[in-house]
Image 1 (cartoon, rainbow, N blue to C red):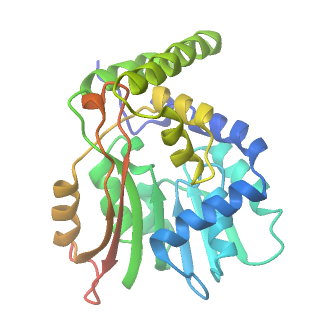
Image 2: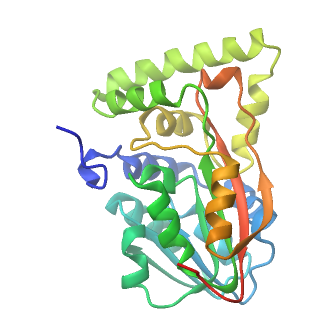
Length: 275
């Protein structure tokens, strides 16, 4: 019997990982997250901002500090929503709310549309990536910006999907053992191929992230889908969007140690959503 991937009970416990990560959030990580958001969407002064899949709330904080007039942070995981509220409550300025809402319900439950919609590394974990992307597109105002990141397809995405399905069910101690084996093998593989593993660690830190929580998220991140830049561009053009920025993830070792996120920024045409 196949799993219903839209059923949250089949998902990896992303919210628990984000709650644990949130204890590391400090001004340095917030500054890194702010730089990351700004590099994609620019100044947010006076603009509305929708954070789909808010996780820890770090990037909602970044949006407030970039001058967003209002921020709506949504996540399907109650632990993520609680963590987002905890971190946002520390911010002294800005108007925000954090709600437990599925991306699939956004077009019906949230009636406003946003100047900027942001969803980094989220939609490929929903169980129906293209439907999720379509729902997110509907939340962008005509002329607005949609910035998102999706896993790049590699030759080994199939085996990794099976690994994730298994990993999410393992006891915590066994998961920790698997993470140690993975990190050791990954570092050795990078060195053998002449790559500096610390460079890739630093790349993650540029967004305010943490390598150990990232590895847990990667190994357990189920449901899992991936795509190509050509597929994404065709999908977005059909919905009246024009590409503004594209930051591809370079596939290493045919995806032996996993995939990474390609970043996309699209502007919605003044004619609005075509579908």
